[in-house]
Image (tube, rainbow, N blue to C red; front, side, top):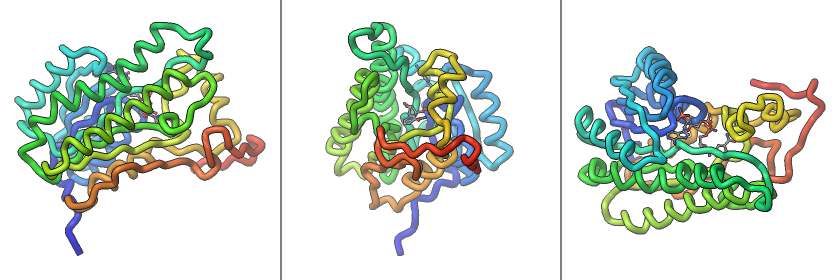
Length: 267
Ligand SMILES: NC(=O)c1ccc[n+]([C@@H]2O[C@H](COP(=O)([O-])OP(=O)(O)OC[C@H]3O[C@@H](n4cnc5c(N)ncnc54)[C@H](OP(=O)(O)O)[C@@H]3O)[C@@H](O)[C@H]2O)c1
């Protein structure tokens, strides 16, 4: 049997590590004894995640402010990574999210621009900036976080679906471009998961966000983090190109089984 890609002591860079999947992935990699490089805009939250990661076994847990929608911020972050680590073994391009659920006819430029800047251009910018630190180390992996929204369109999701479809095609193009380098490229595409995603989408309307998960047992951030760590840890000759992960109650974007709230069991 071929040995898995050892995660202990590896440098793992996670964008959007201040909440949701990114924070949970940081803690999951910490349990494997990885060295963490965490980025997001909310540094106070990054500090909390880094502290918990150290308690769980991270060999290093370093963080730096990062706004993936701004090229100078990405370049400053990459320069910091070069100075503190000098290499990256696992790059998790996770930062992103949705804003609004209006039909195109009522869409807002600011929302569209933010979604495309973070979910699409953010992945391109980060990858361009970090690749030079990965190419000398075959076996490493870039894991982009997509969504089932990139595979199936839904009403009110035009810009977000377009953005995640963009992420999927970036992943596929990179997989071709990096063939022969020994680097792996994957996309992990979750369905409905309860994080801060819906609160952000509905701009702080927590009651509206809670409705999304009503009567359903959605994925947790930890479920997705476990998938990310599993994909990273496959042997260096194994690339899980594309993983779709949905909760059992969600068979397709529009096909969600909802029970009376009293019957919904949460783990
Ligand atoms: N939850 C779901 O149902 C679901 C399903 C499929 C895919 N996804 C995708 O999964 C990824 C993580 O989302 P999540 O569910 O974990 O949501 P979340 O809890 O809202 O986390 C989003 C993360 O992205 C960061 N972020 C947003 N804009 C950023 C920017 N410009 N620069 C740097 N970091 C930025 C946020 O940090 P700061 O605000 O501190 O910068 C935060 O850490 C996103 O790409 C999302 O589209 C989510």
